[in-house]
Image (tube, rainbow over all chains, first blue to last red; front, side):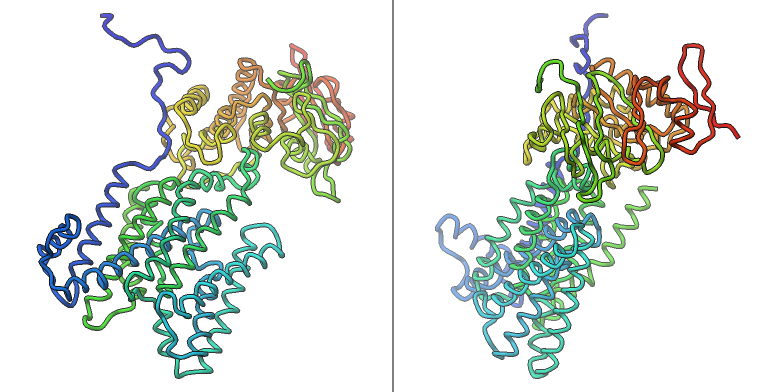
Length: 358
Length: 262
């Protein structure tokens, strides 16, 4: 039998090529599907039932220029309240989860989260100062509170960076600097907050995080930072994997670990600052989502970063849907939901993955 | 090929290396001809690893390091990484990374910072895996490999780098004598097939004598002897430098064997 069409293999001829870990289309498709389902659910659920057929007809009408089945008030609820909030939740979730994954890569530590370098403490202090100095000052997207939070978050990270650099070169020094800066800024924040107890509730509500919007302004605040961060992070997957070899070996392969760290941290921190500015402090997303991705797909940052961005969006949209529906008309802080629902689910996945590995 | 014709693969001229102001290695001269295997030996803390790192441009240094006649300082990072493959004594093994991904890291200096690997890169990886008998383990997580398999994976990564000069820091660390021999046999085969130059530090003096063409004995940051194994491995020299009581035996083919005596 000489029907084989295979030519004699040279040293590298017909050998099947090994598979490098890359982002798989099915993983992207599945995550996008989850995100789409979360968005659809969130848009349809609310104090007023718009009916899924009518919402669908409205979307079709908007796309084709036909007549809408919704009243003007209903259309406003849909386009000025629900959709912007859902989009904001998606953007904030993507920013926090993507930044969390990036921080974990840079620090080579699974417990790193986007608030590690003082973004949360800086934002908290700056926002508290504004709320105390001018009670009832605007929380709107372009108002003084979000602006202060953004500046505070960037300032906190910059302070940690400067302190870390002055003390040494390693990432461990940077983490310790972040801990010191966070503790100090939080202490000042608590002091200021206690000094003016009449603003306690306002400050506390902001701290717990929330995705209440005033239309599309918040979305426009977050979008540019997230867009830049998403591009930077998706392109840095291979370089972050290389950081896992340690600085010396990465350097021997021609990589500049310090440059990779600065670029990735800057992109992730700006996205985090923008997220904190419009939504306060939402914990857990930045740690849980990247780990869910890791446990269900692969450890390579080429996979973890893009899927965390998408998965974080879906996760926070779902969490926010729960936050504004379970106690309706009251709202739960979304951070409570992310931790309450996320932690047990995470534990479940962790157990299953460990069981498989054995 | 870069560099001038006939230039040695590696030349250190008056090199001091380590940390600025506190050199571990001082004023060292070493010449490694193309295609040779030179083993750097010496007692603990003598500066063997630092010498290797100086050749890879991984530590501060003064003096001249020439790679195939080209000064190391004038080469860009990527160009240097294409010329020199370096395998550290205790390589970091990132969690969750597969053997294929790990070996693919060796292609880094050949890729742009943001580029993806091409089919040609994967073919080179496949070739390296096959030559080190790792093809069946290609998709296993690196950390699930045995000690011998890990050292082979590290070597495969250096091989995928396709550098003309290979610097191996204690490649047999943690391997029993059989696995150590198998690994050194592999290095020898590879360098003969590809004409690669090898510089390695080796703890085991007898193995060093058997595999290397030349030995460089380092003590307290200085080269104290260099040449063929029979010239360097003398009982007096080893007694002076290692504070060791040894006797030198000789195999039928004339290779020295270092035997400790009590």
